[in-house]
View (cartoon, rainbow, N blue to C red):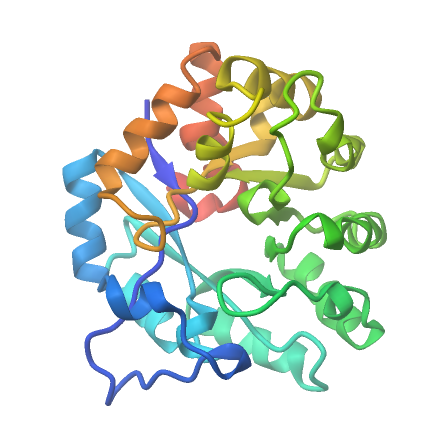
Length: 282
């Protein structure tokens, strides 16, 4: 089985060439405490048995400057693709997107909050961004969205309005699963299953949450597959943001998904990633 990771990050050790300029004005702690160059990522992937990765730009380090994620991934075109971030509501957003894709960007991400700021989904419903969303459909670029349950109504609107854009929910949208089966507290997540262009990114956060309260991996992940289909679920390590080595993070995900069939796990650990980022399949 091929292992493709759709959520590692890289941070340059050359701040002169790639100066930090974090979104919202505050740099994330992890990017300073656990920096990870592209060379370090490749070494970690080799040690963990991860073949390829879609590397997600660190907005809390570089803001909208995707230079390092693009340059880094271009050094390893047979193994990495770059996922960047732009100001979607800016007047020149379509031109900026075209410019970055010309340099190698294969996907985008909207960061509405997280480690350095509370979630604010207002950007997701701002009409000024719609021309940029139209371009994503034209170019065939998937869009990752970092939000929590507060942003699911806006995500629903975008999925319906831009049905030709694959939308990937970072960290599963951070659902509350602690109530256990039938996971009523996560109803807003499962309601999104009716929208075929919404995909879910399974990261260490959910693998940790299913070990708490009344939740369990054996009851949650089969329900997720039954609702969305394994071909709409993809593994992302969140390395090095999440603690642990890439090999440890991968092993935890494998243990969490042990109750799924081999075919379903093949989708989660590789097939869906190749579907979202076709370059990885090459």
